[in-house]
Length: 327
Image (tube, one colour):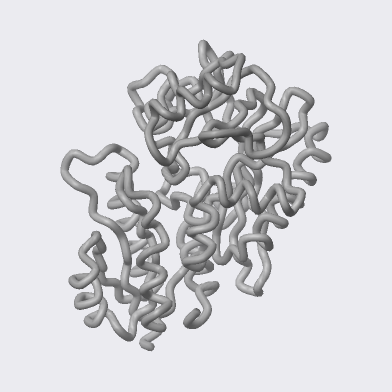
């Protein structure tokens, strides 16, 4: 392999794609620029659902390391591990988490089951036909996709108040296949980002918190518009903060330990982010383990790296260094 050649694997969104899908292009461009500034020769490697064409194109990229930025378009989230599986079959090294880790963490119900067995706290959830664990109680739930991430498909109507299990069954039946209901926690929302230190270990980057204000203070969650539409009031009411008081130290130490445990449970590699929510008693719960968090400039992960004194270029270089060999 020519170690100075890197191909950027990504999915080019359709013309009418949403802001989250369009961000994929920005991410690919900025990662490519950073790699070239580091002295690498880069090439684009686009992927869609045409596997025959992908395998043909892949043949022209042999000798390169693949920088994996593949993120399926909205509605196709279940395919996130498809191309990493092909790369592994072909013996081609790539950055980030393995195909298995991407699959297990992206399937929210499988990941919640695994965390529950490991003793990692995660909110109770309800699948069509019954509560997965614990005892049903009335209250607020969020109905969301098993596979989609980046708030895709979430609206202000996604959080519902229910008094009976039958109501959740009706909501899930109306949502279609691939949805579940998760107990909605309205406490603090904190993210812990992990970056490989290049020595088979993790550097835990400074934690960040989403601070909700205005009308969103009473309904604190990022639906699609609040996350991606800069003109939306909810977007402006949800700001990222790295400011924590000394009183938060014990809580942050607990979150850090849980994030590291998640990294071990799912065999994460390179870079990842663990998203937490506090319940009404202040106890943390893992909402999601993100094995391929957005690394576009301005996104939470690069901002956390910058807070730790890690430049964008250095962050990219460390992700490349942690790619290892074939899997």
